[in-house]
Structure formats: C-alpha cells, structure tokens
Amino acid sequence: MTPRRRIETMEENRTKLISAARRAFAAKGFAAASMDELTADVGLTRGALYHNFGDKKGLLAAVVAQVDGEMAERAQELGAVAPNDWEGLLAEGSAYIEMALDPEVRRIVLLDGPAFLGDPTQWPSQNACLEVTKQIVSRLIANGIMKPVDDEAAARLLNGAALNAALWVAASDEPSAVLPKAIEAFCALATGLLAEGKPI
Amino acid sequence: MTPRRRIETMEENRTKLISAARRAFAAKGFAAASMDELTADVGLTRGALYHNFGDKKGLLAAVVAQVDGEMAERAQELGAVAPNDWEGLLAEGSAYIEMALDPEVRRIVLLDGPAFLGDPTQWPSQNACLEVTKQIVSRLIANGIMKPVDDEAAARLLNGAALNAALWVAASDEPSAVLPKAIEAFCALATGLLAEGKPI
DNA sequence: ATATCTGACATACGGTCCGTATGTCAATTG
DNA sequence: CAATTGACATACGGACCGTATGTCAGATAT
Image (cartoon, rainbow over all chains, first blue to last red):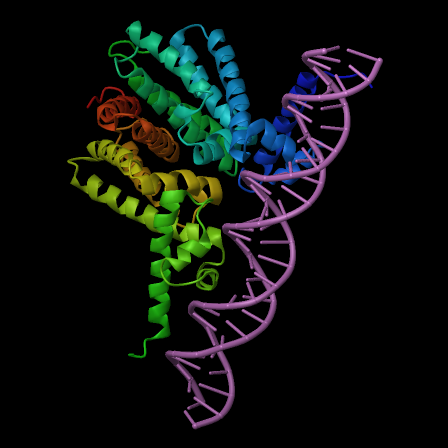
C-alpha cells in the first residue's frame, strides 16, 4: 500500500460521507435517515462522522452548503447567458423553479434545511442562490428598470414565489402540464416590479 | 363524582392533547418534541395519544388542521372587510405575512408541516388558507381585473411570496423596520397580475 | 532508524424515544 | 346485576443518537 497522507484520506472520507448523506437525506428525509446506515454505506462508522462534522445537523449543514453552492453556480451560468439583466432575472426565476423540481434539492435545501437549520439567511452558505438574485435586482433598481423597492425584499419575494410554484409543480399529477402555467404566472407577477413606463 | 359520558371525556382528552401538542411543537419543533413529556403535561400517557391519533404524525396532522383552519378563518374575516376583491387580495397577503410572524404558525404549519406531512395541497385540511386566496383570484380573473393566468398558480405564487417575506421579517434583527419593506415589495409584485389598462 | 506522540476513526455504552402488545377498570348495555 | 365494550395505562422491544474509551496508522523528534 502506498502510504497515503492523512489529510488526503480525511478529505476523501468527508467527501464520501457528504455524498452518502445527499442520497440518504434525499431518499428518506433528514429525520428518518440513520447515521449508522449512512456511514456503513461508504465503509465507515459514526466515529468518522462525529469526528468530522460534530453531530447529525453538522452533516446536514455540510450537505446543504454543497447543494446550495451548486444551485448558485447554475443560476449564475443562466444569468450570464441572458441578453440583459431583466431577462436574466426571469430566466433565473424559471431556473429556480426547475431546480426545485429536483427531489434532492427540494427535500434537502427547501424542506429539511429550513426546518432543522433555521432561517436560510443565517446559513454559512449565506443562501448563495438568493444572493445572486439580490445582486441582479440591485443593478436593475440602480438602472431605473425596476421600482425602487428594497432589493432583499424583492429577491426574497421572487424566490419565494418561484419556490412555492416549484413545490406545486413537483407534487402535481402532471408536472409537465402544470409547469408552463407556473412559469407564465411567475413572469406576470414579476412585471409588477418593473418601473412605470418601462414595459418589457 | 358525576358519572361522565365516555364521548365527553374522550373529546376533552383530544382537545387537551392537541393544545399540548401546539405548545410543544411550536417550542421544540415536531422532531424534538417528546410524546411522553407532551402527554404527561396534561395528565395522560402515550396510550391515549396512540389510541386517538394513530401515531405521532397523526397528532401533527390534527394540530396542523386546527391552526390552518384558524388561518383561513382570519383570512376570510380580513377579506370581507376590504372595499373590493383586489384590495382584499392585498389585505390577505399582508395578513398572511402577519400570520407567518406568529412562531406557532411558522414552526408548525410552514416548516414542520410540509417537511413531515408532505405537500400542503394533499393535506386533509386541504390547505384551507390557500383555498381562500384561490377563490378571490378566480373572481378577479372572471371580472377581468386580473390577467387570465391559472388561478391556482397565481394563488400559490402570491402566498409563497408572502410566506418567504414573512420568514425573512421574522428572522430579521429589526422586524418592525423590515415589515414595511416587505409589504411594499409584495404590493408592487402583485400589481404584475393586474390586467393591462386597469391600474389600482 | 527507532521511539514517541498525535489524531482519525472504530467500538462500546447509556439514555431517550417511538410503536405495539397486553392489562385494567369505568361506563354502558341487556 | 352480570357481561361486554373500549378508552386508556403499563410494559416491552427495537432503533437511534451522542459520548467515552480504545486502537492503530502515520507524523515527528532524536
């Protein structure tokens, strides 16, 4: 055996545990997920878990941070593609709805996260996805395209609307039929934030 | 002792357990609430609980149904006071924000409810509060005041926006300073649903 | 190179909690 | 008044979390 560095294996184990936790939390939910089972799936025990993450909620926080980061990354990609900030905001809203359709995202970040870790704005990951929205909103307000409302308020309202729309779509019998209705309503709602005399 | 009717005492015990559960769930959250402790607080044991509600989630469902019903009742009261349906919708949104500021409502109905009972539209209480919003939206669309978007989509987006705004306000350092920003942004957003050429 | 030490992880244990199976007694019924 | 029902208490088994202790590979010092 090649004598491996301690730091290396430790990082590997952290990665293993987080990926196992993503699967377990998404499948059973945080409360029903067994730490014994979860760690055994990657050939470890709870000893590794409590040493690396402190407690069960610590592991959830790590998983949430990872998924939240991926969501922000994807949101920024889509925002960069749009021809202007306003289109980018709508695209990001649609992207948020789409992301919330992913069972892993929905269960871990949108349901168990707030329930067991508290308000998302207090998370270490700082609600990365919302932060992206807020920056776009700030620019739109500064450019006079949007009404001069509070930027954080607007960002939270938009993401909240998209979130609930996504939960509705995901739980519906025919998601593909409901999705366009949700996006249409979202875009209609968003126009309420446009400054007067500046349609489209 | 006056020989009490069985039905009477049973109903009393159900009421006792539900009110104790409201307190416990609001204070500790559903997952951390102990059924032994909860039942002992009202002079009963888990025997009574499992006989009346089946399991722990059954008790949560009963509590959610009660709180959700109270929310719908309050929303209808406020909607009836407004001079017209549109003003009623805005008033209801503000009311939803206000209700979500109640720790009991926030913890039980908005966080633990969706996390442990699944999608609110599938609840036995049939998401009573959302149903009220949907009816108002339907009338506004029929009267041509609102854009002809899907009524359920609009209702969910509005309530979702209000909900997240409320969570934000509640978690903020200075709720009283943040509240008006949230309401302002909400009303601005809502105007996006108004039909063209029908301002205010 | 060898001895010592550090720390990442495994193992063992105690405490708590849930759900069920069984027991009990008051209230009802004939 | 005897029999029965059923609402609730009690007892038990299984699972799980968090911690305390043990162990051994890898790092460090001489």
